[in-house]
Length: 392
Image (cartoon, rainbow, N blue to C red; front, side, top):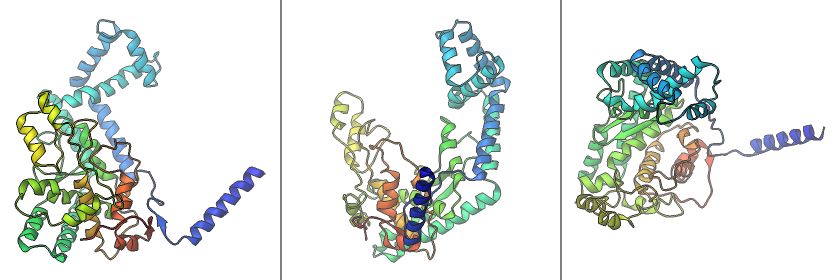
C-alpha cells in the first residue's frame, strides 16, 4: 500500500510540474527509439548480411579458418573457439548454429573490411547487397525529400549571409561554396569513399566531404523522423565548407567574416571550444613520426585537425564544429516554425573521448543552438541563464 501511495504521489508531482512548466528543457521529449522504417532497414540489413556470409565465395574462406581452429592446426587452440561460442551465447552442441554465427561474424570483421582486396565475384556480391540496402533505406520518395530539404538549407544559409554586413567579395565566396554542394548517394561500395571500410557507411549519418564538396548520406541518416533535424544537420555540415580551417587554407589573405562569434565560442560562458594541443608537434618531428612538411603544415594551419595530428590522446581543435553548429543555429532561427525535436541526434548519449574534435552532444545543443534566443522562442525550450549567445 505504501509503495502504491508513493507511486501515486510521484505521478501527481510530475503532473503538477508539467502543468506549471510552460517551457521544457532540452531533450525532455526526446525518445531514444528508432522509427519503424529504420527498424525495417536494420532487419533487412541483417538478412542481406546473413545471405552474403553464407554465399560460397565467402564461406569457403571462413569455414576453412573455422576448421583449422577446431582441429587445433591454427595458432589458436580449441579453447579459444569455446570462449568465442560462449561469448556469442551459442550452444556448443549445436554445430549448425556455431557455423552460421562464425560465418556472419567473420564476414563482417574480416572479409567486408578487405573489400578492396577481394576478387571480382566477391565484390559484385557485396555491391549487390549494398544496392538492395540502399533502395530499402532510401526509397525514391525519401531521396526526393532529402533533395528538397537541401534546397531549403541552401536558401536559409544564403539568406543569412545576405542579412549580415559582410564585404561583397567575401559574401560571394561564402555563397559560392554553399550553392555548389550536392548530395552523394552511396548505392554501391565500388568507387565510393567506403572501399576501405564498407561498414562505415552503415554507421554514418550525414557527413561533408571537402574533397568532392558533397554531403555523403550514410545509412544511419534514414533514422531521422524529423525534417527539421535533417535540415539542421545539412546546414551544420554544409558550414564546414566555410569553416575557419578551410578558410585559412583557401583564402589566407581574406579576413574570416565570423571572427567575433569565433572568439565568443571559445569562452566558458559559451561552448568553450577547445584549441588543438600542439605540445607534441616538435617531439614527434624529432622522433621522425611526422615529416618536416607535415610539421610545417601543422604550424601553418593551427585551426585544422589532420590525419597525422593531433595523435591519439591529444586535444583536437573544436572551433570548426562549434562554428558550424553556430551558423546552423543562426540560419534555422530565420524560420517561422521549428520542430522541438530539431537536432534530436544531439540528445543521444555521447561516449567519445573529451579530446574529440566535436564538443559533447548535449553541450552543442544547449550552449550553441539553444543559446540563440530566437530558437528558444520557436521551440519554447528553456536553458540556464548564464549561457552566452554569440552574436555577429
